[in-house]
Image (spheres, rainbow, N blue to C red):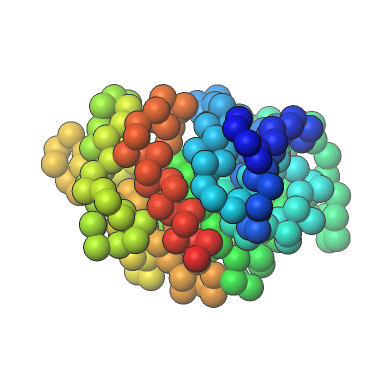
Length: 250
């Protein structure tokens, strides 16, 4: 991967530069945080490769799992790329329960992420993470929005355009993102968000698709783009992801 860069696979992928000063941790959905519609391991590794090109960073990919909170505490930027609890996992107890008061480990992980964010942590939340936020109000509070089952939706996946506000650092050098992707519409969003990008549905209605928020005490960027690995083939989408990371790490 070039001079000064090391790649290894243990829990996931590590892209490390010899002059690394800041750590980016990507939490990928597996097990109960996986779903049938999104290839979260594949998109997580694509995002890791994109962010690994930034100067002065280390990028790790880990599963959203019971033992991940120690790694969260060491992160300078947390990238969330997981989905709502997978049907059947919770009911069947396939990945274990536990914790004080009978809380599941998943609830403890979400609470830990939200607490870290409120203490000033920086979060970049991608695509299907907005589905998880519907199930976990603490997560929705730090993201500034969530999916609403029965109301939210998207037109068929295909070539799409996301219009950006060129005045925001997250959109630096960009006026649009074009990619093969989904356009999430009719999400529930907080009045505290600062919209950066918009998509339109097939009827011409406009919806926030990329936004920032800082009302909870930390710094958050939400991008509802990124359904599959092919979305990250787009140079403009790659630039958006790098811009967001730079702004969050600044």
